[in-house]
Image (cartoon, rainbow, N blue to C red; front, side, top):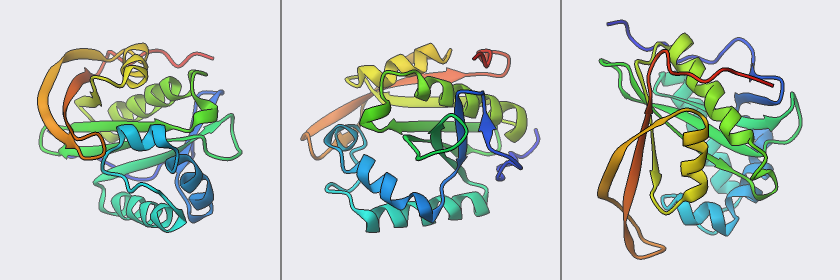
Length: 193
């Protein structure tokens, strides 16, 4: 089994509607605005709240370190080919020996409901399988996060089950059940316009 090859793509990933590119320090204000929104903090319970530019800068620096180390790939989601980011999608290597990766995402308020995150998930999944060499792309989402579950299903992921009481959300003072989804080579959805 070959090792996973996580490195910055030579050009942004694009399907003609959505573009994914690595985060830069120029994106700090956009990240801070989006991540200070209560709905994002509701579902990403490890994220600081309130969320400011210092937090966003630390996030960008951490994403750049993950790229260098080959342990993760963090992309800004852009509507079209340029402009301000409207979301984030990332891939983390969970088991390099067996080619397992996990993806996660968030979308700013103004970009929700437009299908951009589903397109981004298709793009990163295809890249992970075809270019990185992933044998399994996994996704976990809080079972109460209906929007995130819809994105996974629309992108062609198969729901495998539930990780019961797998984490704790301190803000909501509750244990979290995660829905587990996967996508395997050959199951990628077509990248349509």
